[in-house]
Length: 560
Image (cartoon, rainbow, N blue to C red):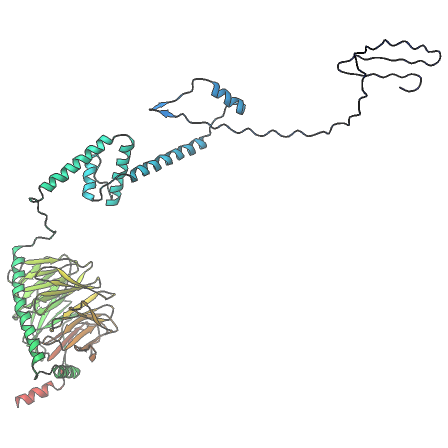
């Protein structure tokens, strides 16, 4: 209200608008109707500041509903009859929700993994047989294949475990229990018949000839071992016997060895040599397949033994008569008379032969071959008595014990094995060489064994202690053969591809003499029965005869 005229308009939601006019002087003011006493006067309205403008908050995204898969009850899928659940979902999400293909696959994988885990837990709680035959029997009774291609024992047992767990989860316990009861009944029936079904250890049944040969070898070896031990005791107890003096004399003779004769043996390289038991003949063989006999001591050719179709690999004389045997790459061994006539042919090896040796009794012949076996042959009957496996690679060297009870074999598997001929068992495996073993020899003392191989070393083994006594760094190339002096074993001769042969003391295995002279690999060597001569043959096609320098003088003095 101001000036001449004033007006005020009050707008209220519950009261009507009232107009008041005031006049000045001549202006007439109309009267205002009286306000009832019951209506209170209107209080002045305070001034309200304008409200602050607040930006509205963005609405939170709605959480997708968790869709529960239908729960199976007794094989029936539970379905929802009412639409209230769908309506609730629609209210929560504002529309229908579809599961993506990726989510469905993930959920299926999770369910499968959970089922596998439960199955493995169930399988781990089952008792499964550990014996492979029992596992096969239970698989057969459950109607499952007893084995699968390439399946091993542990895999077969695990397969049985999973089959049993599956049967258990499917509620087929009756079938499982029935199989178990049948298995227990079979075991009990077998226990009742155990007296009738006697189980024997596994062995390869041999012919009756082999049994007779084992008995003969046992009788022979007892006599020979008794004589050897009596001689050793006599030398030990006899005050007139001076062992050290005998050894010193033998080593002096070996130290005086000189080249006595050199002869061309063949047009092809020579591969083996052997003295006869009386030392009057020397046999050699070569790559031409021909074996030759030479008279001693002048090394004059006596005869040639032709019969092999491929190279000859070894030759050896019998210890009891003048027969000799040869081995060849044509997979055969042959027995010859001194006049050159063929007596027997031994066939049976599947690959080329290497070394051969006669049994001390002269009744049996041992052969080695690249077919990973060595074989024992009957000389009189010409039949194979024993086919012996045991080496993982080719068998190369062979040697018989002086008593005849043991035989040693060596091969390209870097092993030497000692076999008992009386029982057929492998009684000792000599491990130490790091490369193929090519030569082996028993000492006449009965308890030392020498081996030589491609690692350029010669090892001396003690059969009593079953270990290596000496490791001799003998040559600068592979050792092709080793031989003990045949009478007492006072010294050892080794031949090598370094074109030399060497003599070693049998007492402490120190070097005694080196025998150079060959111009190529020395393939074999031998010592005469009386120890007077050492013969070596080589790829240079020559035979070299070594003898003590003062031996001829001593013989002349004896004659005088």
